[in-house]
Length: 342
Image 1: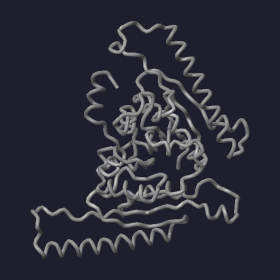
Image 2 (image 1 turned 120 degrees about the vertical axis):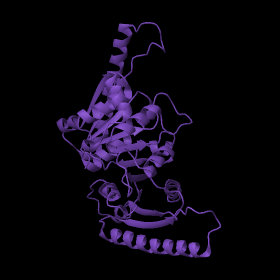
Image 3 (image 1 turned 60 degrees about the vertical axis):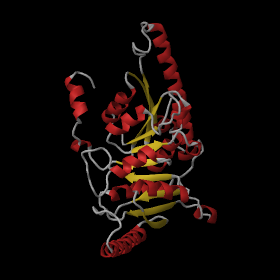
Image 4 (image 1 turned 135 degrees about the vertical axis):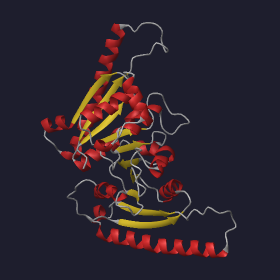
């Protein structure tokens, strides 16, 4: 499912927080990891003085040495578990240093190098801020149209260097075929690394995949209080919906080859319900499909997924269901192309 993982870095510990998650995905899916550093020249507005060529070359050399050190560390970490031959270890981890605008270079690199998964931290060298996602990360995930794993830099518990597996995985699903495309990722993450350990302790250490559905009460275009007939119809609809969704999740649970639990909640806000459930169940990672039953594929993400990207607090894997071949350029992209800018 994921063969080539891209991890953008900027030299900061916050950005490096994405690396343990990338390593875990690489072990589970047998994927290679490519580390990318983009050096942004200082703009005239930031520094009217001309850029010193010697300083810039030193900066590039320092960045290359930094990336080489990170790559060697990742190779060692993967080698501890995978027991690969030395030559194969080198082939699984590589790095690049580019110059230019960070967001544009990350997106272009992902598309030209056939990347399957982007693993990115919400914040980097600019530090933490009141915003849940930095401007660079937001630009990248808006245009990349690939599966994305977003690591919350402001939550230190998600930046654990010794992460071994995701023990509690939340997969919200809205009963649509489109949303079901995230199931395969959830199954593989719940399985974790292939292990030959058959001890009772290992058997009791299995991950749990939580299949969750949020039922929204129907929106009524009439003022409250509602007539008694309307209220009764609404309650009946919610009851029938609850029963149908419970049956759907139960049948799915019985088919899946991993340890599963199911949960159905009622809420007027689906993203808020997902966040509350993630906190209550002490979830390690949330998996969402980019779009649900509404299927508004002209946008990179549906409303529920985008709201959780912006306001969620758990690591989030977004499985992109729209092939890049079907993506139409935005009005801003068209205007930028015409003006000679990317």
